[in-house]
Length: 136
Image (cartoon, rainbow, N blue to C red; front, side, top):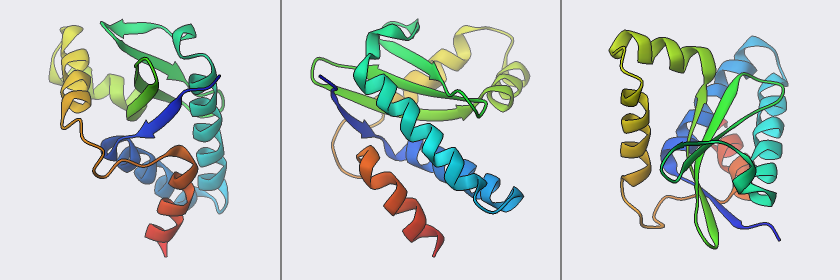
């Protein structure tokens, strides 16, 4: 049975920025990106343990069509998506910031641990509505 998924505000902002960029490149491409993110999150909800652990309880899943990673924490009854990052931009930023491999993990852990309350969290089903409403 799929677990309940919550998309944290930081991840929502990541998705919104990518949506805007893809939509600016070609009309409709932003919506295709959003569909791919929704499919990836759905796969995570169905089989959260099938994706690699990057540090302690933090996991990542790659999208199939677009070069993005979805970072999440799988708890007993809930999955918290805390970042959605472009694979090459993320890697380039990390290499410039520090050569140490632990730095990106610490950065992601910081994002994940910022406020554990439900304030500002969005369920994946509501994400499309929030992004489209913001664009109008």
